[in-house]
Length: 86
Image 1 (cartoon, rainbow, N blue to C red):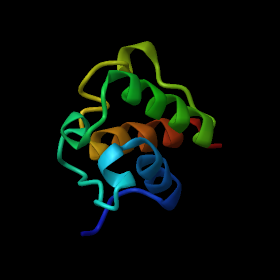
Image 2: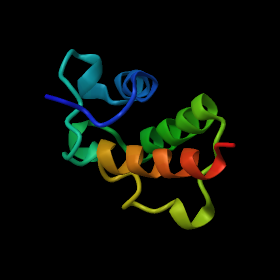
Image 3: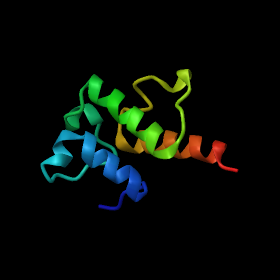
């Protein structure tokens, strides 16, 4: 399976998605909650992404849709990175 994200994001997913920790690949389009991530886990993942990429999610991005799937989280991350890159 080809994934749309970079290695850093993949590492963060493996660290925060319980099913990935057990050796199962994170599917880009399956809801993260269906892959074992609870609400606290979503918050930890978001903070890890912010720290790893030195970005900040805006308040209007803090809704279920942004972190619904790994793909949607990566899309939001990439968009913020593009806006903040020199």
